[in-house]
Structures are given as C-alpha cells and as structure tokens.
Amino acid sequence: MVMPPAKWRLFGFFYAATILLLLNSVNAAPYLKILSPTNGTLLNNGNIYLGKVAPGESFYILASPTTPNYNGTLINIGWDRLTYVTLPTGWSAQPSLLYENPMEMKITVLPTAQSGIYSMVLRAVNIGNYSKLGNLTFTAYVNVTPTVFNISVGPKKIYAGLNKPVNVHVTINNTGVSDGQFAITASGLPAWNSTENIIVLHSRQNNYIYPVFVSEPGTYKFNVSVGSTTSPLVGKTFEVTLIANASLENDYVALGQGVNLAPIVFEPAYAVLQFINDIYKYLAG
Image 1 (tube, rainbow, N blue to C red):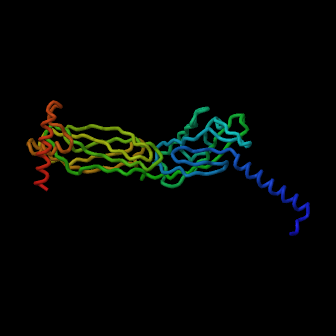
Image 2: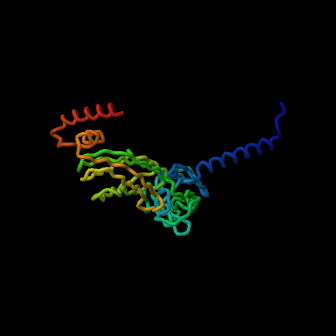
Image 3: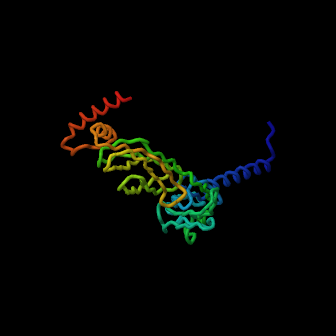
C-alpha cells in the first residue's frame, strides 16, 4: 500500500476540518420557527407560504423567540420582536409586542385586493444585537382569494308548530389562515329579524344552530344568508322551506327536529311523542 506524501495528508486533514467547521456553523445559524398559521423553520433570507386569505381579512403570524446563536447556544428570548419590512400596497400590520412569547404579528389585507399571490418581507429582530444574532429577514407569501370557506345549510325543508322555534343547521369549513367572523341571518319570514354572530377559527370546521319560527300557519320560502363581517366577497345564501301548521302532526315532526313542546317536567311525554314521530316518518317514507 502506497501512503500519500505527508503534505497531502496534512492538506486532507485541513480540508476535512474546514468542511466540519462549515457544517457546524450552518447547524448553529440562528433560525426562526413559525408556529401559525403554518409550521416552518426559516434561516435568514428564507421564504414560506402561509396559505389562503380573503380580501379585507386579518390573520396572525405566530413565531417562537427561541433560537441558537452562531456558537450553538440556545437563547430563549433571542428574537425580541417580529415586524415587517415591506407589505403589499394598502395592507397594514401590527408588529408583535416587545419580548412577547410567542411573538404574534397581525396583518390585514386590503379589502379591494384582487385575487392572486402576494408577498411581504418580514423580519425577526434582536434589538441592539444584544444576543449577537443580528436580524433574520424572510419572505412570506399568501394567496388572496374569496374562496376560503365552504358553507352549507340544512335541511332544505323544515316543519314547525306555530310559535315553536325549529333549528336550521349551518356548517362552515374555514380553509384559510384567518379566523373568520360571520353573521347568520334570515329573510322572508314575517316578524323575524335575528342575527347570530359567530367566529370560525382558521383550518377548522364548525356546526351552528340557527333557530327560526313563525306565528301564522303557511308554507314559507325564506333565505338563510351566511356572510363574513369583514369581507363582503365571502358569503352564501340558501333557500329553505318552512311548513308551519297548527296541527298535532307538525308538532310531532318539529319534535324530531329538536323542538320541545312543553317544559322540562313533561320530558317523559317527549319520548312518547318522539316514538309517534318515528312511526309517522316510517309510514310516510
């Protein structure tokens, strides 16, 4: 076996040591952990896609202040604030509070923003470079689109006794990065003007009950509207038919839709009425 000359062995040693040092310096580089609305770890000049948001909505970016310095020492409050460098025209932002953990930054989209991909340059700041981190700058992307919610209403036909509330079920699936604020309203029913305000957290699906009632018998076709309170482009309207009669038959059907016919002391009677209602549905079906 022929051994390489000493100078080549020495060169190989320094080459390997240099590569190891570079790898260690990369591993020890300060980073920023994004916690919400998506997860990711960013180095300086990195980029991240956050998700979808509707025009006019606000969303929050949460990030951890913990990071290692260039020596590999983990610092619990390394980043002191999350702020912005540039935003799309007409957008606004509120930087995180000083020394907040986790850091929480609010960004509001222009209400008239057109659909498309937008970028913003954000920055994690080590104030005064006290921890020898400098600043970490990154680019965040969002997709502005009104189609960030899936909304459904049911059933399309409901039965009720007079002056007895009956429930309409509303389901909202929030696929965006904003915690959506919605209003549920009904139009087309006499003497009924009730609004339910709700919040649907980002990346969540929730079911809500919206009760309606009438005091006169008849068949009513009315609209249930579910709309964002912050973005006029987000919302949907559904037609529902309400059949209201002063009859025992409709009382049975209404009972099956979650309406109580009497105070709680008569609960045993509810079971009997529910049983009759089930028989009625079976024979009618």
